[in-house]
Image (cartoon, rainbow, N blue to C red):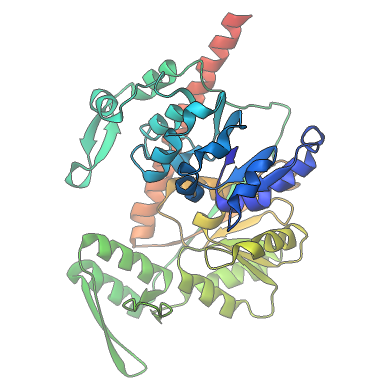
Length: 412
């Protein structure tokens, strides 16, 4: 049984099973939709994490399954999350258990605990996360809700799990590489005034088309979200149940600069967005171009066709939401240009999305544009935080490689 993000099990796994000769003799079924049970009659059963609650009530279907593979295991980094609890109840039913991820510690090395538990049920780090946390981490952050590792924790965790992980390295495989270009932008005067008012007072008042508009942030967290919206170009209206979310546009600096870059580059471009209004405004700017979208708004049945159209070079622009398309999508055949219209706060989605084009089969070096609004939380908080977490993860992976080499040398 393979567990992975919905997008991955529907578009990527079927393609890979067909691509490799040693797997073509195996059939597969996708446990999604109404007839999930039928998928368990096949050699390989693909299921997404949201299907595990249903599987918890149908564990008898696993009687013929020998091995478990969790693709993008960081989906289970939360030890107390429901999806993890459902999975833990099935672990004894598999003879072998494997997890795979390119971003094992997207926030801190504490994220590794729950993932490793899937493999060895506590043999590496112990059965309970609370005891482990108190020994190797200390509380920090807002209201002491976060946990930071004591000095040396990374190394200790690697040594605890040293015979139970493998860092895949193919020195013969040369990927073209990635080049980042930061494009710094400035808010126009009226938008800057709105931003500063929200930053200071949690309330903004402005006039649009002669109509007075007032927006209020409920607390600091809500304020941060609204500051990010303003930097992007708009503010959402109050949500009304059963109705589409509306918004008030404040500026189009990002949308216009993105259009210019797409026009200047003259090559297919993946544009990563975080809010619905960003995709809406980009479509307005890019009229006349062939545009596809992969996001939660797009029906599941349509996603493979959109991915195929991109890889066949039938699209000029692919609008991609990082939560829907960060994991497991192979997009390297459609182009080598990518743009973060608005950076995500989630370092896992950030690193995973950046790896969609620089993959096996890519012909050219990948260029990733990051549109960042100066004087806002985008540059001072978001980008800084993402880059720091990237360094932390790189350090852990390099230490894993070091220990792995020592073990292999000792085994000779």
